[in-house]
Image (cartoon, rainbow, N blue to C red; front, side, top):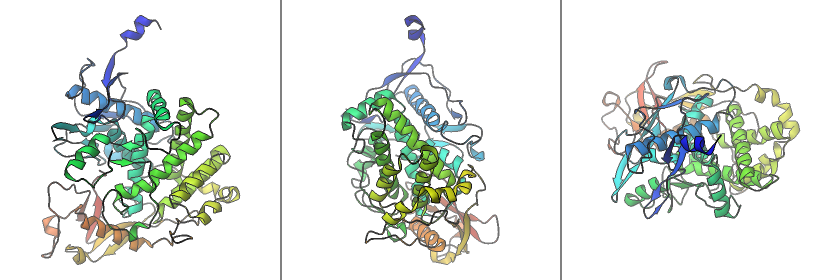
Amino acid sequence: MTVQQQTATPTVLVYEDDPGFPPRVNMPVPHPVPQLDTQPFPTAIADAAPQPDGAGPGTEAFRYWVAADALSRATQTWGPLVPTGTQWHPTAGRALTAHLDAGVDLNAFYDRKGLWFFRSTVAGVTVAACESPEVVAHETGHAVLDALRPQLFNAASAETAALHEAFGDISALLTSLRLEPLRIAVLAETQSDLELSSRVSRMAEQLGAAIRQGHPNAVDPDCLRNMANSFFYRDPVHLPPSGPANTLCSEPHSFSRVFSGAFLKILAGIFRQQDLQDQAGLAKAAEIAGQLLVDAVVAAPVVSAYYAQVAGHMIAADQRRNGGRYGSPLRSAFIRHGILSLEAATAITEPEVARRGAGIAEATPGGSEEEGLTAVTVHGTSYGVTQPLTLSAPAQERRFGIASSDPAGGSVRPADPEQVATSYLEDLFRRGRVHVPEEHRTAAALVDDSPSRLKTHEVIRSTTGEGLALVRRCFD
């Protein structure tokens, strides 16, 4: 290709990662016009595509191309890693559609119909969620995980919900690391110690800064969440439902940091074992870590102590794919964050993986919505609901007899499915996240009708029997 042909290739201006918040802002760079209709994860944007004319920040054309570029990179990140035949959840349609101006809010969500991005003006700055590649890649990650494990969508469990949020942040991380300039930049910023805070570990700096204006302790000091953290596992059943960003609570975004923090350390450990610790070695490490995570979430049973099972299956996947080459950084990261106890981390041996290998190898993506879940019915009146309320609790058989760390030593005894589900339900009501229609409310109903609080769940008439059921609307 000649220089003349190269300069004729149409490009668009985009942010490569988060735009930042004044006065610390990133500069847009030219990228080739992104392709959205790619397999196995075709995407679309509800708005018509503008001309690739170099429109800059603050314009709708710029926001369109930033979102399109991030969608394309996110799906190209996960597409090669997922099993053959993986596709979007059926209700999303053939292509996952993004809606770039869904209303006024500092938020974004995935709801099985598409991706929805909101915007608001804070301190004179218009903060559009679609203008952050990290936010776009995070929400796309929800859709990818839903394609792999639809059972997680309605599971009444803080740990499965938190894994969804961690997967979203990991999606943002790996999508950023597809870009050579960002790999070079993060290696320079961290002096090749990827466990340190960096522009790719800090999630959604602009959105975090905007939220911090009204809720100073709700997010990290320099971003929304940081994967460079030291949060240690606690059974979410025993955690408070909410709290400041410097503490751990059962709220899924908060609790997700335990797993995403471990994943960053895994990436760093795999990178240290590459032949060359350069940007190409980082690209390879990101691909390896992402593949192990995909293998694990496809195979891991949906159980109450879900983090430990996913961790165990990542170690098992490494033994199958790489002969256990990365077992040390995997075990170290999961132990440091308490996701695996010392006893559990040493229990997943090569013979143990081989003994259970057939079941793992037969694992396929997708499956029935109810697979691995059991119905738990509670008294609706305790929650201001007129009839008995049915929840979908995680209850598959554990493949590995492992558990997370008890801070006092040893392993945590996993809570039973009913306790997990009822604790999760109480926390949802405490946080005002459940929409209860008027006809299903008792006279003593304590329902948060604040229009500014997104309802991630709703109570509906049961489709499988009498009474009511709790179902998820979206992941935000």
